[in-house]
Length: 308
Image (tube, rainbow, N blue to C red):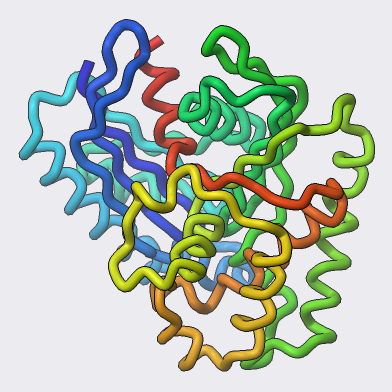
């Protein structure tokens, strides 16, 4: 089965074209990501702006050409997450995508969490013990505890929090660079949201897997990647001490200088500090000292789900 999958997030619009065999083994043919900032201005207006929607539609149009190049595609899947869940004019966005031949499927947060765990767990079939997967997005963060048994993912508990790098930046990190008071306010908000869930976890995780752009960017920054190398990023382990050091470094820089940091996409520089703060708080609450970064995420979860 050949699948063409588009994931429209609050910050990034991504594409995966892959072949999946009956056993669930995935062969990636094309993977793309464009930072489109769909959620820009959403907090102030409650609506997706025409400019932001057009950025996403332009990305989708390009992805459609990729699907045509690798045709025939047996199934095309397009999902949208936090920004599209929150916006009062998602129907307008759906009409724009329909004109390009795609049906908008806005998935709920719990489903986003399930798919993120499925995608991440599939990449580490031999990882033992309870595994916590964290997906820091632009508008929401999904935290999922589960296990991998005989190559199959089993979810113990999951939650999608309205805490994301775009949402927290817009709500708290107003100055350039952000002040310590603003960062403390962000940490308090994230802790208030996360603490009831982490305190009630039925099992302590043995491993933590972090997916999505904040986590992968942290590895690229640590390794000073002039050219992003997904093979080097996937499976890399980052200590909490390294996370703290990178967060302090990025937070001290004004945006213009942050955009020049080797390994960081300039278009992500405006929201990366909030993303690292979210991860910081989670690891304080968990008492964990390190995490594994995965390139496999919700896109791969969607592929496996469709194949099954």
